[in-house]
Image (cartoon, rainbow, N blue to C red):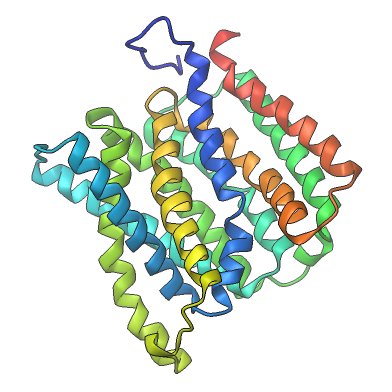
Length: 307
């Protein structure tokens, strides 16, 4: 069974889908916003600013909701490990994004649900039903159709670049972050797990900032503080991190990591809509076809337990 007991039986269990769906929607704008930030801030520095803003927001909320929570040394270590994993994911994601094209970044991201399923099965002992497998395959196919209408898939051909390898590592480590967070979510809550993993990631990324600035011969004082940069950092920190990480983990309170992974396919679809609305890009017929196919796959996964 994939469903966790719901304390309020009057609430439909399918409402769990709203949380990861919202998280994926918020992540849909990350690529474009990150590119705006890269115009002024080196990638690792931008990743640090993102988690720092997110950590402050999450800590503020968690201290109001759980003011007297205590953790064992073992769980503190688990939060620290989780923070290290997500720090690696963010660092490689931002560096990879800076070194690749939009098509490469979006296509590599599609692999995240696959990594999540493999880790969920191997580390958590999750079971894969035929319906779940079919849903993932259909959702993958639909997302690739969407992306093929936006980008040139041939850009992935040839020798792998450093950027592509970085994005592959980012996908794998985000999947690991998802799977490793499940036990902590079950013992505590989605809010606490997202908060303390985010807090643990801050000093890890902070150490990388002076190294990056020294290599790029840049300095914090040389970064132009513009309205566009402020909006980008706030979006990344408040929406792309604090809100989205909590919402992603909130879904894990009710279902397995393998199930929740399917909602990651929504991210590039929302990214396409974001590009059309903000950048004036054309969606085309493949977006409609691929989006419909992807939606069928996500529906099959999200309703798997009812089959």
